[in-house]
Length: 386
Image (cartoon, rainbow, N blue to C red):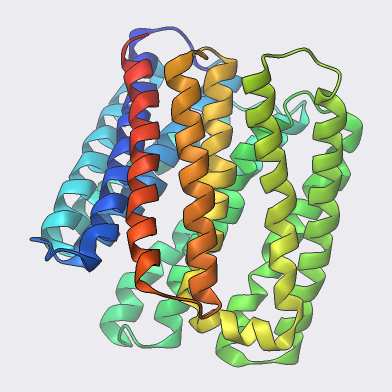
């Protein structure tokens, strides 16, 4: 996955540090119910989300792409430094001021640095395998997703933050960033040895469904039947494609001999691959398609399913695969803690989305968020000591 030079090792280790920071900020947010935080909740939320998407997930995605195409990370040393400065800058300044001059400056530095490194990488790509083509399209969707970022400022200044176009700009970025850029990188890792004969069907289906399912956001704004139908078509295409991916992954691994912990992690990811498109089918119901717009809990649960369940655990799976982590008592315990904490918190947040709530939920959310933090801390400890 990653070359063995010191810059690469430092880069990947920094990804695990960002992951730990994301988990720590999550625990602090969960404690908001019990204590008065010295920092406004929204500041912590923005630092948490930016460090997750643009820190941990971006760092590991770049590492994967550079490794797959056997590109020397030293060619991108200046961009790597700029990205590292901007990620830490965003984390600190969002905590300090949320959206303000400093945090926007670091965010801008990040986007420009990301453009440069991804443009340089894109020029060197070869697309002779499904994984390579998925990574190529992942980069394309990253560029497209950031169009939403550039629209946020003008729409906020001219139309205000309550305007539909402002919200659509944010949703556009998140949709193509999470379901495009990050999901495509994760699938590229999982489908590394897929025969070329499957390329056309999988790639076409993934790209078409990605575009069509954005229509749900348009349906929330314009309430037109055409947007409901486009989303429905996209969901069905996506479901067929993901079921095909899951079947291929199962068939490719069932006879391979691996450590039981490694296989268990793989089958956990495979379960998430099945859950993602299946859960989205709920919006085939017009009633639920409307309800979800205002159901913050279900939206958060689904975002966590993709970002943690699919993307993050796939990065961890690949880190074990390439020995940036090794299976021992520490890492096995850390993975168990993380998965257990993730499952319980997902169940609780989902129940809250269906209107089931009581005080013990908040205690459980904080407790199992701490469990996830401990598990991730154990993985970071192992990474630092390799």
